[in-house]
Structure formats: C-alpha cells, structure tokens
Image 1 (tube, helix red, strand yellow):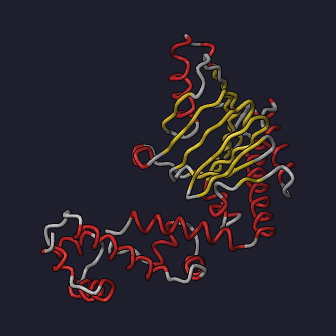
Image 2 (cartoon, rainbow, N blue to C red):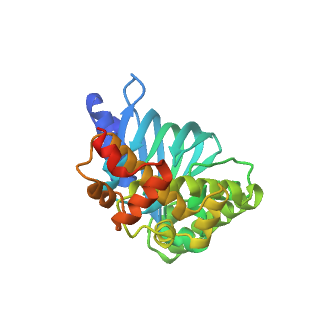
Image 3 (cartoon, rainbow, N blue to C red):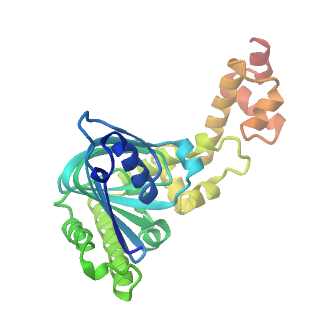
Length: 312
C-alpha cells in the first residue's frame, strides 16, 4: 500500500457513517462506534505506511469509539498507537485513566486493551507503532498509555513535525530505504519523548498505572493455576522486579493480591448460589489444593467454605 484517501462524501448521505466505521476499523482498530451529531457525517481518512509505522490522518466531526473484550477476542491486535491532535479535541479512557486532548496534545493508547474514545477530529494523526519495536527502545512505554503529552513537553514538537512530514510525497513508496529509516526515526523519537516524561514525573505514576493493569489482569486470569509473578511480568513486557515494586508501593505483594482476589471471588460464588460444591469453586478460581484452599479461606473469613454453601 502506498497512500489511500477515503471520503464519506463519496457515498450516499444515509450510508456515510457506516462507511466511515468500516474504513476506520479496516485501517486502525476494530471497535464499536456511533456518531454524536445529527448533521450529515463528513469525514476523511488518509492512510500512509512509512516503513514499520502506519500514519493515518483523520478529519471528522464528534463521534465515539469503544473497544471491549468482544473486540479483543474477535480482532486481537498487539500495536501501540499515538494520537496527535493537530486541530480538535477529544478524550481517551483506558486502564482506569482518562486523558483529555486539546489542540497540540498527544496520547499513547494500546490496541491490546479495552478503551473508550470521543473525538472531534478537525485534524488528528493516528500512528500505529509496533509494540515490540517501541518496547525495544523504551521498555516502560506501556506505562504511559492514556496520559496526555502536552505540546510544551520535551520532545513533543519535533514529534509533531515528523508526523506531519509523513504526508510528503517523498514517502509514497512505503518500504523504500528512506521510508524505513524515517519510520524507525519516528519510533526512536517517540521512545525518547516518553522517557523524558518519565524523567519529569518520576516512576511513581507509571507504577500506579502498572498496578491498576496488573489488578485487572489478575481478575481476568483467576482461574489459571499457573498465574504467577513471572507470567504477569511476561504478559506486560516488564521485569518481575518491576511488578513487585508496583505492588510494594501499594503495601502489598503480587501473589498476595492474587490470593486475595481468588478468595474473594470464591466467597462471592459460594454466597451467590453459583456453586455446586466447594471443590468446583476452588478449582474454578485457580486453586489446585483443596485443603490449602479451605485453610486459607477459614483464615481470611473465619469460617469454612462449606458453611457458606450450606447456608444458601
């Protein structure tokens, strides 16, 4: 693919938003969407590959996007994306954080996790960054999703200029040597910009975000007996030491959080009438030793699990 342009004015008015939805899902991230204006929808998406990076320039009135667990299962993606609002405003919600965007702002978001977004995109650049290439340059990049990077932050303005430069006809051949180098330079500059944000804000905020993502990850994988400090670290592309430090800041340990979450979910299942036996509950929530589960449950709640089963 060299470069492509899609205009909703090329289709009949009643079909415009459906057309827009299909085009954006095809070239960006599959998600649910809805228009937030009663006016005929006029949008344009310009698509260009520059080496390993794909840059899309969007112009469209206010509308909403939501990527949930269903989309993650049906259309799994592993890229990180950078939004740059050249002109417009919007908001992203991901991982328990909300980043607001105004003209000149940027924000990193993760295609591999749920998000919600509203965007009034008079001119917005959306750049797909291969996760492995960005993490190779800055291992903590994922900790900065849904965090606004204002125009006056170090590294922001050169990155703006490079994103806008991708429209240059010189990059019409996406896999030319020059395009490959330019795409690599874009990833390099984004990595530097994110690292500079870390230097300004410190590690505490990033570790708080990692803790929130880990907590959500634990909730999704309670039934996996292999869930461990190492598997959590691998799933989030960080070291086990980083995971341990993120939980330590909250006065906890990673595996302690796993045990607490499993016990709480087991208790809810027993009290909510969703369990046929204590054994079923234990195994469904990641416990592989029934006697160990019973002892831990009694210690946490002051009663044996079978008493809650009988009390229903």
